[in-house]
Amino acid sequence: MRQLHPSPFAALALFASLTLPGVHPKAVAQDVKQQSIEAPHGVAIKVRMEGPYTAETPLQVVCYFKYTAEGAKRMTGAPVELDKEFRGAISTLRERGEFEGAELETLLLIPPKGSIKARALLLVGLGEEDSLSLARLERVGRVALREASRLGVRRVAFAPLIRDQGNTKLGTGDVESAVVKGMLLAYDTERRLQKEGLAREWTLEEWEVEAGPAYFDDTVIGVKRGSSEAATMAATRKSDPHMRKQ
Image (cartoon, rainbow, N blue to C red; front, side):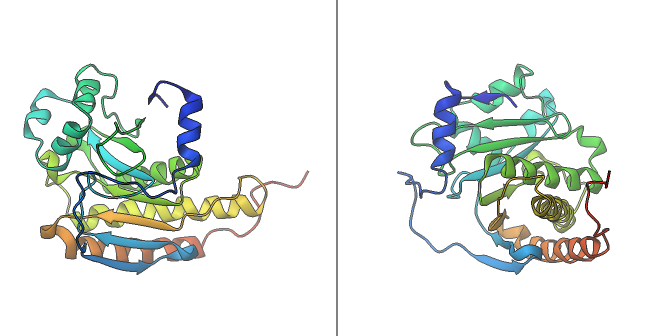
């Protein structure tokens, strides 16, 4: 994964401190509407009426369709505000083809001082806008979970930004249902691999789903459905070890 950061050693030092609370000079103390949903393996999923540029989290995940000049003109809301906080770096990367937003393409950015409250921002590509599907969004959930595992962060915030890019092909509840299902099934795999000694110890404690006021209720319904479907599918998986006997 490419990383916008001057030194890999500095990046390691930063991620060692990801669990420390950040302070944002633009933050305003206020209660954020949220609803908690119980998920498999003790993961706390919280739907929060909050944007990715104000959430205080070790890792913020956002999604982008494959870049087109027309799509860039249609962007509103959160992606526009995020780009402002990064002093235009996100749009520059996309215009230059350095992060196109191809399906499941990823790029990790370290926020500039005094910008967003998240300690790191992960961009995930949604691919071609016309071919967006629930199956692809499940894969997005898997990729986001595995990147969180790789980085060792225990709290993640996720915003698909699909409506902000002018796309209404899928319902907001359906989007989050697919993402959450993919994420939880990937975490189930991680837990199974840990028991076999094939993955390092790591626990996902909290997954925050960010939703605007108009989509909050639908998002809650979708998250509940995705969590339930993931639990059912995980229960039917084979229980024998992944490693074959020699």
